[in-house]
Length: 317
Ligand SMILES: Nc1ncnc2c1ncn2[C@@H]1O[C@H](COP(=O)(O)OP(=O)(O)OP(=O)(O)O)[C@@H](O)[C@H]1O
Image (tube, rainbow, N blue to C red; front, side, top):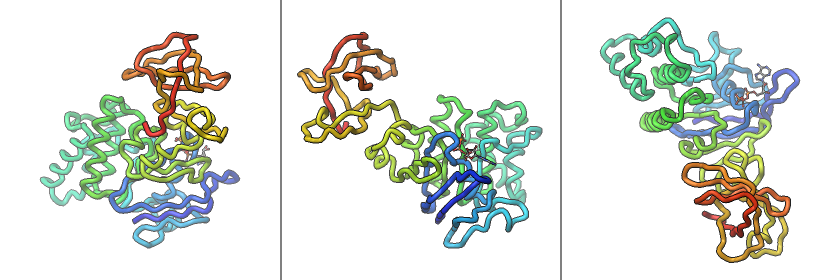
């Protein structure tokens, strides 16, 4: 089990992470969701042991990890980090890149292992290709396979699918995260892709200005969205008073996601003037105004600008 307790971490004068504590069970997948520049990579580098943590502790199986000052080569052996500048050897083949991380004691066993990993990252057909001749996304997949070669106990993935097209990304994510579960490998993924976090995390940790904004299962995080910062990861949103949405004495404004507003066949307090419809495939995202307040909702067909429509609120839909 990983236990992390960061009081503060600074690069020179600038505090990047503060008051951040969490633990991770063996086999668990935690997704760190945060804005660009929010400290996600720094957090992974601290866990891996590339950066010194003077004000805080990182423990693995109850033992403190001592950081770069205590190792000749920084980084813990049982942890693998796939960094954004994925470290691959360009002038050797895909298979050789993976093989360098294997024991080389049993050639047959290594071959089987290489094939298994190539299938996880969908690169079997490229096993003899030189890495320099691969695309950015393919190199990223080689980096993931090499990180898995020596069966780490904890895998740290920094924006692991940033160079990979949507078509391949979906199948790769399913294969990779299923593989990690089947081998009981713990994983921490840093991303700003909320859809990825919802689909593949056991728990999500939202990071805001280097501090913990929220932590919980994907359902808890999504159903608990309470601030514009949190909502902003997932979709457009509206901020509307309770007494307009439902029977309430309160004029307090709350966050409303597009799918929570539906066209109403009867008049409601929420009469919207349509501004624009955006095609989203399965439906349209409609942007409208209620007075001067921006409102976003989903609709099965496109609506014309200046059209008016009544909406009703459905909290759990
Ligand atoms: N070596 C460094 N020295 C000084 N400042 C740094 C260093 N590395 C990162 N920073 C700063 O620390 C902050 C956090 O950076 P970090 O790379 O951890 O963010 P991130 O959430 O991973 O961002 P992204 O999603 O864009 O990769 C940024 O403001 C960055 O400029």
